[in-house]
Length: 122
Image (cartoon, rainbow, N blue to C red; front, side):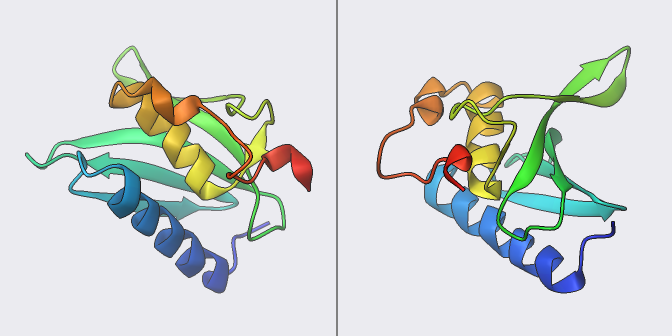
């Protein structure tokens, strides 16, 4: 299932806004699409690109499957992962927070509270 153009646009806007709000350590985020996957990369102030996560589209423009980016043997790979909410899927913002918490060294990003939408609540 290919991600619709409108969902691609919405996804880009959501992660870019979350990056501006929560992750000023990044110059920006970039999102690339292939089939039913969206690959989210962080761009550091020096221009270095850091793979963060992969989102899997399952038909919803709100919730996506989550996989963390890893480097193994010099290759970029993605491993399905659980978000701090305990779910395998969540919002793009939750996925960005989880990945940035890991790669930017800020575990406070994994604290969930009642003010954030839980992926398991839908």
